Amino acid sequence: MASGRAAKTAKSEKTAKSAKAAGAAGAIVATDAAVAADAVNTAVAADAVNAAVAAGAAEAIVATGAADAVKMANAAGATGAADAIKIAEAAEAARARGEENRSPLQLMMGRFIKNKMAVAGLAVIAVLAAMALLAPVLTPHDRDAYNMAERYQPPSGAHLLGADAMGRDVFTRLLYAGRLSLMVGVLSTAISAGIGIVLGSLAGFYGKWADMAIMRVADIFSSLPFYMIAITVMALFEPSVNGTIVVMGLLWWTGTARLLRSQILSLREREFMEATTALGISDAKKIVQHLLPNAFGPIIVSVTLNVANAILTESALSYLGLGIRIPIPSWGNMLSDAQNMFVLQNYWWMWIPPGLCILLTVMSFNFVGEGLRDAADPKLDR
Image (cartoon, rainbow, N blue to C red):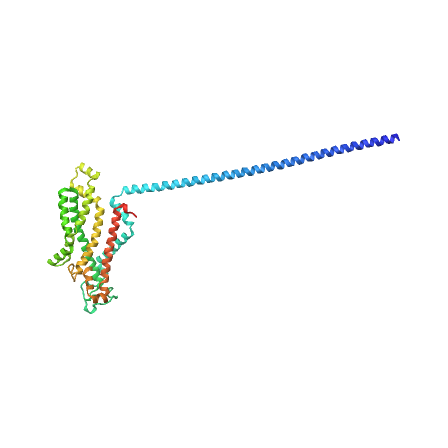
């Protein structure tokens, strides 16, 4: 019995020891598992932290890159703007240097070319002048040849602008009339401009008694009624082309003289004139080589506008029968056909073409004169 109990007790102790060992082993295993789980969790957390850090770093890098990109773009834009400004300044400086190397007349012509209306007017004048000069080539008809069987013929293939009361070709006479009208305008203006330039230069340069005497003579000529003087002269002498040119040339110089006098009065006080005096240059060279070139712009404007006025005046005198007389054609005496109401109402081709030629020519010279006026004064650039 005792041995059986002892055996049971020993067995129980073994079982207990085994259970303890198993428990200890389980505890160890559980502990190891917990530790492993903690390690895994720690690793995962560490990875998460690392990932977060990496993401933040990436975002920081991206943000930094964006900021750098903005800075670089701004810098590039600023550099581009600075380069553009530098290029514009260089172009302006080059243009200024180019203008400094050009004469006042060249600068004036450069500004004139930019005026489209003035260039168009100059083109119209050139076309009309070319047609007048090439009249023998452009028309097969003789200027004064008449055919009573074709009187008052309307425009046709044989007569581009019809025929007049004497059967003469209107187109042919219109071209030859342009020669005379333009010649009268240019030559009479040349005479008046020549007189005005000489007297205006003397009055402005010498001043005092010379200025007073010349300007009083100009006042007398300005007070004379032009048409009354012209009609009187044409009545005393036979109306002719030469007479018309001389009368207008001798009576129209006052405007040019006054304009040039005022320009020279201003220019003679400039430093370059003091230099010419110090160099001992003669008065004639001072006027011709130094004063007139600097006063040339306003004179060109005045002369151009005077040509238009001369053409209108010649047309008026010829219309009244006191200028160029038939059979020599001019635009003015061709318009005289419109004095007949029957012709005015029924035969438009006899008076509308010369009227249009006068209108186009006068307007063109006015456009050219205004263009030259604007070109002569840089302040009027638009």
